[in-house]
Image: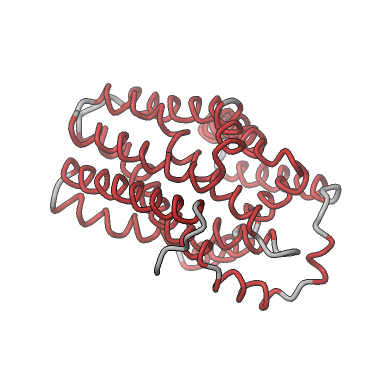
Length: 295
């Protein structure tokens, strides 16, 4: 166990910077069309589902260890492709500590990171406990699998179509408010309609919850990042805030699921999403009007 644990820790350290670097590179490559970020991200979803299925099928027939060989092969290809990716040259001339200090003192950044932290908690609840809840409701294995497919397909379609439009016309702040409203609706369905089919259909809101929050946070980080700190700003949102939020959400929800039961748990977090939407909407309106709200 412990050698495997050590390798997993090393893998986590190496893997953690990849997503924010990809996010910042995608936003830089898109330039004025950064609202199309979600469409770029959707290609990841298109590749993810069939490759995961194929890996599972091959592992059953051949050997699980071959999946690691395949992982190394595709990682090597990704490394070659990354050599041609444009970078932000001003980053080489930036003082990272000064930039981080500026981000930390910025009221808008503080408010957005707090909001995205709450959003990450809600993402952890929805992602980690949907399958368990369906199993609790005595759903079949095929229906549980179908729920994941419904979420993946709907999110991919929305990332290609609606989300780029919303990012361009609403901006990251308003899009995050919208995602809170959708989280409240999705979790309210889980709490009030404990039916496997209803829970499965609610997975169609995945793109309007998790997808909208992701697109909104990336847009905000791209617009508000200090010069030369695009990747660092994305790291704050993707790794630090999102990672801490998901960890906190998973840790808290586990005990509450066992003690309170799933319906009160989801009802409570639906209320949290609704209250967060109201508070963040008020904060966003104050900033839009030029009146900075008190801390």
